[in-house]
Length: 114
Length: 155
Image: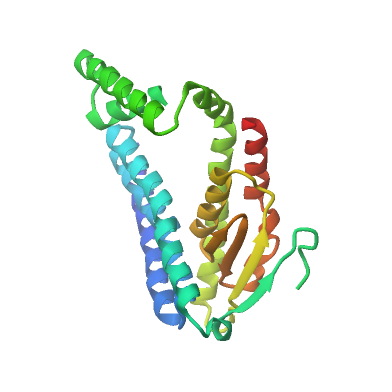
């Protein structure tokens, strides 16, 4: 039982690490701020969850595990707020936004309209 | 909310003894009184929140599933050397009417890799997507359906 938990926890943390590596790689691969933020969002939301889940498995069913769960929930509430602020700043101050991204307005009644 | 505060206290304390429970009751009551007085909480709202609980749990799992799915999509765009990505800024409206639901949707969209809410202005979302395919059906996603049901329950 102990061994299974150890192996599972290690696997989770390792896959979290892989996702973080992909994130860093993506950060350098994409050239534009908003695209880079998308790459950053990967680790923010899913990589961190995998790492914390792995740590929770190490701790087993205890109070520390619940505390980690709270850390996770707090991160999920706070990280979108900060990335939203950065994105908003970029979108509102960049005058050549149209060069970087295409824009499209979707109507409620006609969702597939281009 | 009172029970939640008490549980939080006990978790942070790390052990359950008569002492911690009594102190926890005291502090939870004090904080709950403060919240009712100054932060617009009430027992009435708590009752609504309890009716909402199953939907919230379901929402959490839907969110998790969406995050896993789009993580793999976004990772594919990063790792693959040939797959071109086509960033897009989408503007759309949702039928959500309460502020809480709107903010929850904006947060969920940002949390999902590949999409970031750039601005939320009176029900009109501006969302940046890493690729066109991620923008498909964004205004009628499972998030929106669940949030609409939550609004109905609390009304």
